[in-house]
Structures are given as C-alpha cells and as structure tokens.
Image (tube, rainbow, N blue to C red; front, side, top):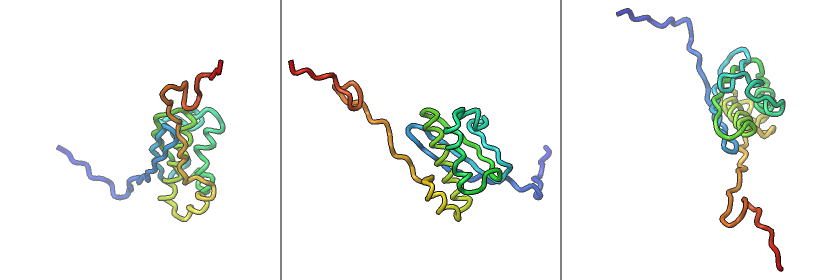
Length: 140
C-alpha cells in the first residue's frame, strides 16, 4: 500500500460559510479567495437567475463590499421560487463576507444587506377562500 503525503506548499482552500433565508428559500453560501466565479447549484448566476433583477440582487453584496472579481462564490439554493432564492443568496453572501471582511460591516448594514426579510406568506384561514379573502357577503 502506497500512502501519498500532502504537499505542504499547496495550501488547502479555506471556505467561509454563510446561510441566507427568504420566504421558503434557503441558500448555503461558500466563499473563498479567487477570480470572481459565482455558481448557484453548479450553474452560472445569469443562467440560474435569468432576470436581471434577480441576478443583480444576488451579487449586490459583493459590489457593496468592493470585492467583486476577487471572491469565488458557490451556492446551494433550494426551496421557494427564484425571487426567494435570489434574496436568500443575497443574505447568505453578505453574512459570509462579514465573516471574511469584518471591516465591511458598516457598508453592508447601510445597504440593508444584513437584515433578514421576515415577511412570509400568510396562512389560509378556515372558512375563507385565502388568507383574507372571504366569500362575497349579501344582506338579502
């Protein structure tokens, strides 16, 4: 049996994790020093999030922190729809950047990127058509 020794000259890549949530979507984000790769579920950000608003929302934290093109971002997103996933990615990237660059906190906070959007879909009530919509009422 041959045992290969690890080359000490090659440093292992250290990932920093951040988790983001929005509506029913959850995004687990890993970032590391790199050349600006941004993959969501192993697809380019513009392929996975086809609308400009979604894609720009996902990369917003990198622009605010001023590290766009210097960080590789790998995201595992699931649940909800694409709007929720884009918001979850945004929060996850911001939280991971905060761990990597603590000095970027004021700019991220000012842009509102560290705040979890707590709005959720209201549940459907018994006896009603939806969360609030009821059958039309007729007096006579």
